[in-house]
Length: 334
Image 1 (cartoon, helix red, strand yellow):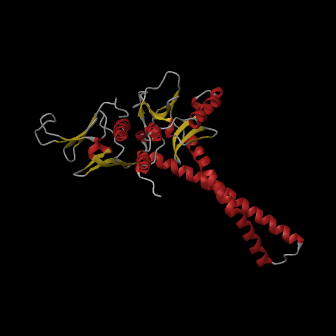
Image 2 (cartoon, one colour; image 1 turned 90 degrees about the vertical axis):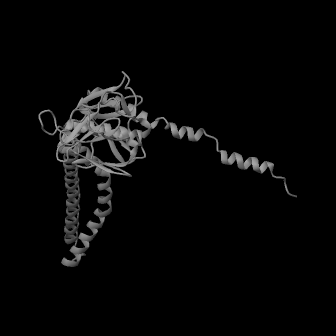
Image 3 (tube, one colour; image 1 turned 180 degrees about the vertical axis):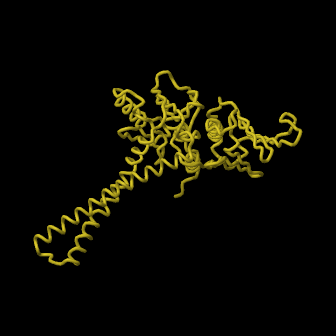
């Protein structure tokens, strides 16, 4: 189980007089009047009892075949009786670590800048590793999101740009006439090119607006965006996690990485088509940037095959062997 070293957390819900304990298991205590926690009889759930878990902006929702549960953020409070995002992040780490050990559980969540911990495996980070800590910068994230949008925008511009130029030219000829007049023709061409330029600038502004919108969603849905983050890149894998819950005993193995992209400000690793690892370059000296880029590229290009896939590849095809043996046993017909 990933993040199994984290201690459990007790959460009180005074509205319905209920106490939750989130640990290696999930338990619910009904707090009746004049009854303390020790004397009440809890409902205890193993994580495998849940079929679905999902995180919303305000709560965790747990569903099993027999019952449903809900853990609200508003009751995750510190000793000063105020909402403490670090306690919520610890709860999230415990829940996602349990889901990593029970992959049959359906899990959904909102926008994230950090990888979900369901991708993690227990593994001690070696001493020879690239390690850094820092807080994400809004401008860096927005700039990197614009870079990620550029390939899509380039396709749209190349698709609709020439069409817009031709359309603008034809409309000018139809409306103003004088197609064979050289000066008029040049004027039409200049206006059409300017129109195409406006489309290009509009596309860039749209990408900047889209990046800003994505960041606003991150701020609303992921409290980790303002926390100190620990970043790790090593031979066994990579990791970015809130420093308040990370103890260097969990990583994401390289076989889960699909490809890698480097921008002016970030190293970004993708799983399938989703960016799961955002590492700001400013956290490392400039002389290390190329070395780190080469290391990540090499690890992804030569990533080890997942153990299950290796065993499957090495396992002999029993059905084929059986069919061949049956074929050899059958008498030949003249």
